[in-house]
Image (cartoon, rainbow, N blue to C red; front, side, top):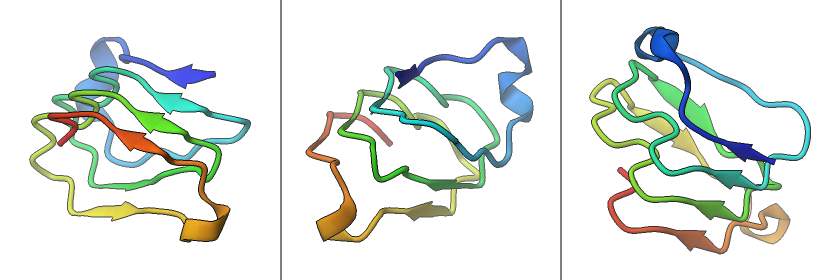
Length: 79
């Protein structure tokens, strides 16, 4: 499964949590939102370009512990 761009309410998003098996955070998934913090699920293998672009309120990103994370790639211009 992939988290991709949200619809017009997207600018109101401040926090989000996931259940299930999210494998990727898609291109531009959270760009231009008011998201303040984000925890990367340990199942995520890739964060695609511009996923968090122009997230001026983003102050905290929690990355899973190295030996429990499947994250192997963060593309250019992600933040």
